[in-house]
Image (cartoon, rainbow, N blue to C red):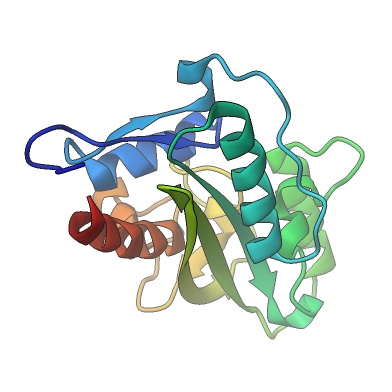
Length: 199
């Protein structure tokens, strides 16, 4: 498929409107991105592994097997040095019982209480299924964890993560800046560069 003659279509293995919005900002009108909701796909995609790479590919292949279309999946984790890399692959369900974003965020802050070493990083791994082949892309941004939530933009752990080189959390930063420097932006821009050559 030539991107100049017909817009390529990719299905994103997500129902998360925040993630979808971020991806649309990156891809703009270059590639048409459809969500699981757009495709009427209501099944729960599996995430049974201990590594982001493995979870992303597991979700990807479950979707590709079901829809037989070009698609991509991602898995993202907040990795905190003082917590030995946690919450990591469990970032979205770290609080276990309730698994709400706020519960996850406040559990991290509770575990980081009185800890001075607050270095952390966000890491995203994308798995892309394109013409029956799988490709992977990674994005990493380093930063630190705040003492309390700040800002009302973004989602997830954004209110407690300050990226290196900035004083604002991801939830305080202008979203145009975040969509340029974030872990997800880095990974998706790598994928976009690849797609420009392949499609």
